[in-house]
Image (tube, rainbow, N blue to C red; front, side):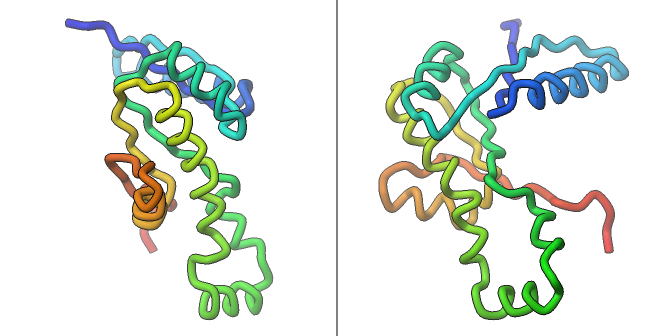
Length: 150
């Protein structure tokens, strides 16, 4: 059986390191052993990101990038949020998900590795938009933002 290694990368390496530890701790409770490492990646630097992807040569990239956390909109005053929701729809939030996903796909294209990119950053809208410029991730997955129903 081939040994798999996971790399969890973030702009802030300390954040990635803490998440790796959390995953490792959870796996240990299930008596599983994972080979994981944390790393820093800056998707605004496409050349650097491409070099890292070339080095790691991942079989799968799971993209969960965003420039803004989903809960930030809850911080807006209710009247502003209501107006944005009815008049602007997804418009104000699309760039928060599209920007880094676009940069990631540019890096994947630039480094010429064969990898499956699963986009979890608003794929219903970002994937078709990126497809219009030949950079669509081949798969998308919507993430549930709430752990509790209702």
